[in-house]
Amino acid sequence: GFAPFFLPLAMFIGAIIIWMMLKPLQSRPVIGGLGGLRSVLASYWPGVLISVAQVVVMFVVAHFAVGLDAVHPLGMLGFMLLVSATFLALIQMFNAVLGPAVGRVVSLAFLMVQIVASGGIYPVETTAKPAQWFHPFDPMSYAVTGLRQLISGGVDSRLWVAVGVLAAIAVVSLAISAWAARRNRQYTMVQLFPPIQV
Image 1: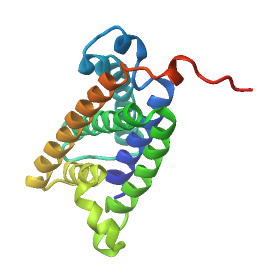
Image 2: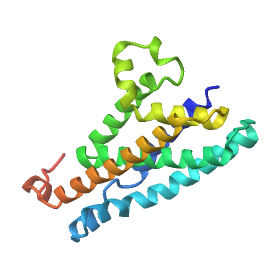
Image 3: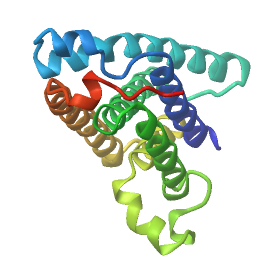
Image 4: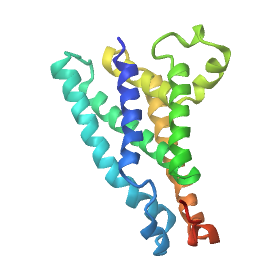
């Protein structure tokens, strides 16, 4: 019953950890004059490969070890890959726009808001008014809805809405990261000559 909530939660935390291990925006392609989107993808694709491995391991453990018998297992696997790629792009955007230090803090704060507003544990109608307001804008709520339908059956238009929203979030996040990459080509004097720290 909690699998549709805990799987996206694990994927979001996994995406945060991936961007702790990898640079969200590599400086060499940016400085080398590579286009903004290509600079972003140069960092994004290695993260995607790790997230694909994460999703496959999670799916295998859930299916064979835990005994989660999804009605649409291949659809579930494909949707999990989309969710993971979306979260990866979203967190990369936070890091690219705000910098790695602030981006990590914002990612963790955004995770807390998503947990409350996703409706994964309690029905969203029983939560506080701010969580109810944020629910339609919460990426994790679409991940929970899609996984519920793929695991339990009864697929309807909500699944396709979830797929469309998550894909749109991924595309917009990559576009904003590309803008941040172009912006980062301009160096300030503080970046060129950082103050000496003792």
